[in-house]
Length: 364
Figure 1 (cartoon, rainbow, N blue to C red):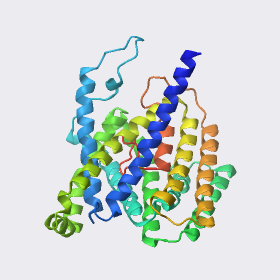
Figure 2 (cartoon, rainbow, N blue to C red):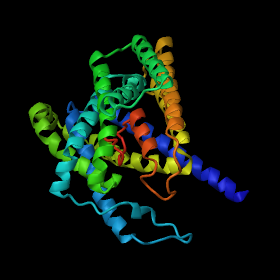
Figure 3 (cartoon, helix red, strand yellow):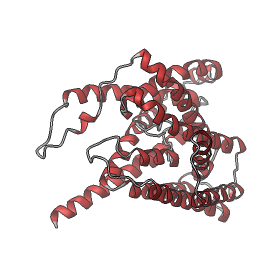
């Protein structure tokens, strides 16, 4: 009985941590993108810094992981840190990952632009078409058959998208277009991740490291071209050197890495299905909280759109998982819950850096 209570307590703490990190990441990024007194008008620079922080953490985690390689606890389980490989950048491998990194940059850029331009309460709706693009791309690129049940789920999501758009008081066309573009890139990222993984020995943490290093390099010319003027202005008025701004940047960067860890922990503590249900519930709470925290004005159609989109996404998950049922992977495998992690990316891409190591993530 005591052991069962302990297990329930652990599961509750993991789920609560996942919710806290995921929701906090979205709210922090919203502050960094569009809050007066904190943000600077340079979303590419903000996203570049988060990729930089993720790459640094991957390197540090790899160094710590090397020290704990082969170390086990009293139950014979490997150390938590042993999952992190030594982070080293090989140019040949970096080139192989580069096509995925281009998609990754598009994914996190449009994700953060969407978050900058739309209300937080509308964010999940604006980015809800990922599963639609998933079905389109798998049909066109992989020639996979789409079942009537799947088409029905897509219909529910699209109805929710249009309901939410019509019910949004402060509707932003450019924000919605950015959300649609983000959804497209999230779908492509999921497909290309499977293709590129063998180049990094099927290790998601290695892929995270390469992706974020490549992204840092890709963002630099874009920042110089599009954001040098805003950065000069922010530097001259002192906002670029604000302690609050950099504190928020650091926390968001750490959370961007942490979402990959807490996602896997939640899947391993529960199940892929429970994880996706948790993610759907979290997205609903995140949207409802936004009405109060950010002062977004709720409407009947807006709220109906949110729950229609989330309901359609959840039913799609159930249909997909039932269709793809396979024997359970090894319990200790960090990459075992790939399908669920990819689904989490579809639902959130929280960080703007939520690939599978940040899963992912890019969020939320």
